[in-house]
Image (tube, rainbow, N blue to C red; front, side):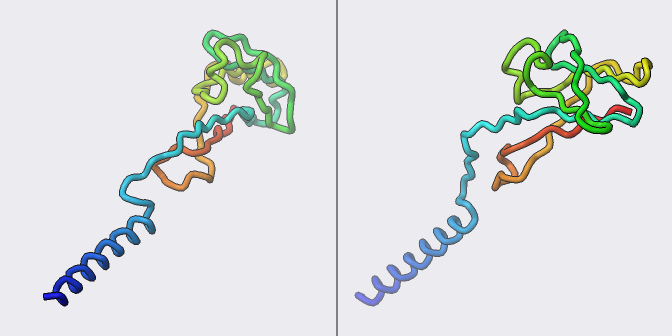
Length: 141
């Protein structure tokens, strides 16, 4: 009888050990995302065709576009700060659209709202967790 107890105890121990090893190796049965908020507060990159010599932009409802300094040929970086970020400060890091007015030699090439799309950056261990992100460059043609 004593050997049966040892056999059952051994089988139960091996089973529990196998289940625990499986869960530990695969992140456990329940995956919980970190409570750390990930906000991208860097600039929004605007790429324009050659010839664009003036770009104004703003973020916020009913905002007024302000001139953006030229970064390099065909690229402007619009900071998420005043005077470009107008209205609620809660927009910083949570943009969905930006208003852009682009001109080439006095001809308006773009004047309207453009969607700001997010792109996931490396750093989140699990695909279901939001993790770090940035903004895709906006292209003006």
